[in-house]
Length: 118
Image 1 (cartoon, rainbow, N blue to C red):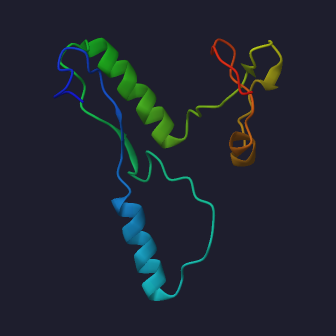
Image 2 (image 1 turned 90 degrees about the horizontal axis):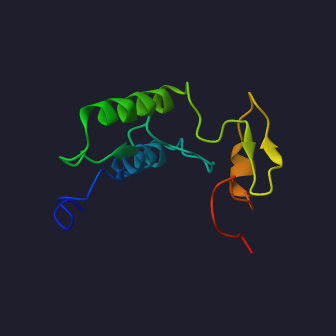
């Protein structure tokens, strides 16, 4: 994206499924593959961030990288409570995180998000 918006591109998500596919093929070849739900991310090297645009200040880069490290290590969870929906109802209590099942079935927006799920 930097090539198209060199003065406006801050960063972007990057998904590199290569390591996941390689590991899956190796399991198939070894006869150890089994059907399962999996959520690879930062820790597995599947998800990352693109390089920062030149206009992103160093203190912001540092903050982003600190949050990235916390997510990667499992110290931080994106859907950790307290989380409220648009009507103000608590959907995830303080100290709790959403399960994979809850995230897959999520039919509400977090407070502050403008829009509807209907």
